[in-house]
Image (cartoon, rainbow, N blue to C red; front, side, top):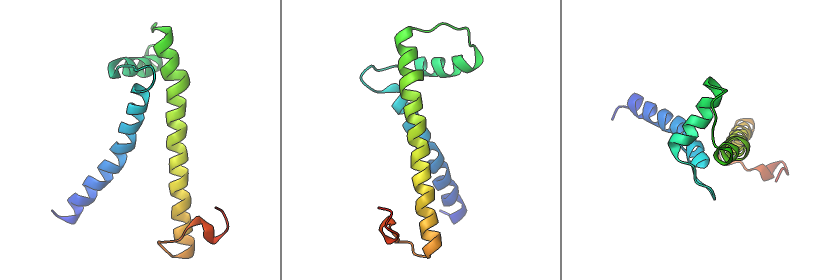
Length: 103
């Protein structure tokens, strides 16, 4: 496999894997919500604000799971950026946060 194709596959997987995890986080839990209902709630709220949904699924998805999934993705991204900054600053691919006493 040529390296350009391999790079494209890795980039696509790196983009799709977090999105799949966010969708799974919206669907699974103590109160399971089917994927089609999650899509209807999230996209229906954006494109059809007057559309009515059940109170429980709407509250579970929009007020509990969606904020938690988005904040988790943002925190994970921030940790990745901080790790990359440490590696670039010290020019050491094995640097840890303990080198500056951040741990």
